[in-house]
Image 1 (cartoon, rainbow, N blue to C red):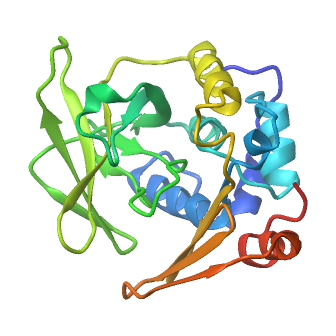
Image 2: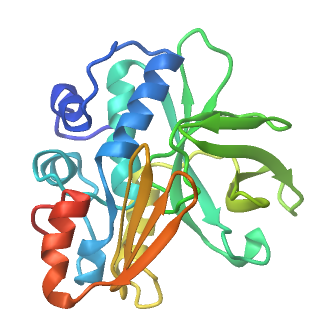
Length: 266
């Protein structure tokens, strides 16, 4: 993905705490994917404040790396894509329909950015995604294949094909929630480019019907817990499935963003 700013791989890897190998192989892909997921929070503080976030690389670097902020899918996966390409991977941008809670895939627009990744010499492509703001999100990439269950960082996923009217196969990412398989998002393999995501980003970041423009949504995940601030409700889900909730007063939000999510200033 071209940009007028040169990507600072050293700064990015420092931000996510990755000091492993810098090779375009599966081990590096998994390690960097997980490190990013654990280090940079998901948040929509710009859209909920009336600002569509910039997807320019310089702005993303300033915000997510040096500013120690988070972002939503377009910001996370644009940054991650640049990192993977700097490491030597081939990356294709995809667009997905978020079907979590939907009756059928066609009822939702394509508003989520995800990535298809190839490593040199490896014929197996991988679905990678560090920007899906849900507890069922990928923490590690999964092979693009059906018929298998994949376990990564304590989460269980699989890919299935769903019937639809288009000429391309429809892939659906599912996660196991402890009781059943739950659909997360659906996608085809036609590529999308930066101008496409600019349009999606403007719509999702400014449209009054978008869930990201009227309610605060901040999450962070670690090895032992998932923490979500949705509006004024803070939900903590531990690795053993224990869930606790509490309301957060307005005057406590700024402190909470810093202490729980590592966000210094929004």
